[in-house]
Image 1 (tube, rainbow, N blue to C red):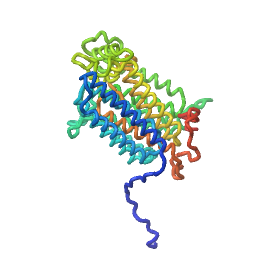
Image 2: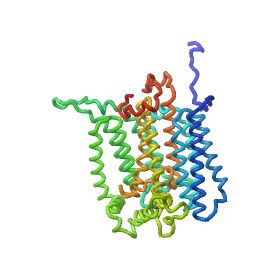
Image 3: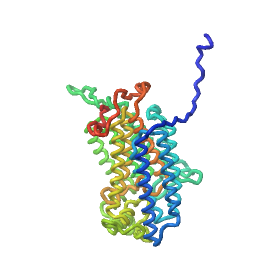
Image 4: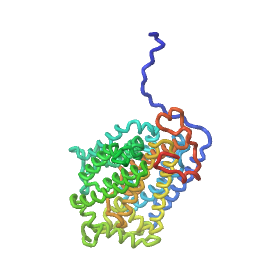
Length: 479
């Protein structure tokens, strides 16, 4: 064998992507929307200080500089790493984050400082996610490693001297003086695994291939492993007394199963199982029984478990249509709403900004969900499509569950309002989720290479205009 025929050893090397020069109209639109979001946040911060102290905040210009500086840093990363991705997601998240920060700063300045630190960390995580995840197909390729990481994060709170039990739920991990909820990251990893598995088994779960008598039925065997994995996740979350995330994982699994197959029978079976599971949980887990009892009639427990919900309603009633005004509310005073800026952020906004402020929040989340589904429609592979749907559903259902809980449409689950409520774990995880959606959007807008065909990418699918998106189906894998 000649020396020239020996291939050199392959070594892994990280290389930074090159910056693409030229006009970037989407990033230009994003820039001005970020400026607008920063201006609105600064105006609300000033109004809150005027209402509470009768003067403008002393750090007004420093606050404006910090908001715009952080936003522009992430914007420059978008210009470099995802130049053609949608310009809507980041400004919406920035605006929602800013509104939530104003309420946190208004009621608890110490928590606001911590939240500002977590916002800076979230921006770094956002950029790091875009930098290290260059192609969504890499996530698809390592689906089982992703699953193992998700399981490890779910089980981390059970590790002695590592896990913490707070407010009756064993969700927290204490490492190096920092407390965080690993389930916030695990939910994203479960989305990736579910999307990868359903993209692979979609045809087996859709096309009838098993004959019983004179009829053909869908072979249920490919569904067994994913159902077992889903059941394990629900059991672990139930053992941790985390009812909110157990409901989120269940809803996410059911949504991806229905979207990937388009078969209503799976949806019906899932809803039946959900009803049975909720009935069993209400009689088995004390925390579930308590939350359901408070949901049915909180006035039976006005000074104990129903106190938080009742006080939240009083805050919403005080806000009315236009709100009491920023800095003029009383919900966070002694004897007011417990955990106002974490569990009950929706009530805090409703008191001081009223129905109009709540409408802005609901519209903001609706636009986030709509943009995510548009990314899914424009995706070129089944995995990218299902992953975008799953990430969007995670954000949408999480926001819906907590808002519906405050309004008593559903039992209060304890899930935090994405981007708005106080909490570093949720903020970091949601910005990582946003970065994945931006990566999927970038892939949908750029022309795929010939090497993508092996991963199921549709090379013939042209870049679509926004007017043609509504005519496509999300779940069938066809455009």
